[in-house]
Amino acid sequence: MSSRKTEPLKGLRVLVVEDQAPIALQLEDMLVESECEVVGPASRVGQALRLLSDNDVDAAVLDLNVAGELVYPVADALEARGLPYVFATGYDPSDVAGRYGHHRVLQKPFSRRVFLQAIRDTIRQD
Image (cartoon, rainbow, N blue to C red; front, side, top):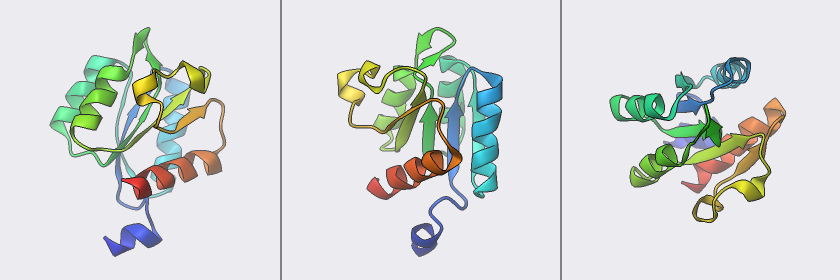
């Protein structure tokens, strides 16, 4: 666990839930470059829930609206497992439902630096 403090992303298994392929690929690339293992990406809520139940996951990046469906069932499943996550959305951060408001919300577009720092911060808080 001490290596997680110096290299908090190395070896981390991150579920990516994003329905726009170019953005999903960009998130995946950023995570892989940081030595994470990507689970997914999932382009539908049901697919994300299946990936979550079938795989060990350490954290997640969730688009708020996935193919017209809000991602909250995935957030609930992550909460039930005590797993950290961030929202990555084109919506305003105030659009995130109140009970999820304590989670980090990255408003698209965001830089690689901002994205990776948000993941690091989220993992440290866990």
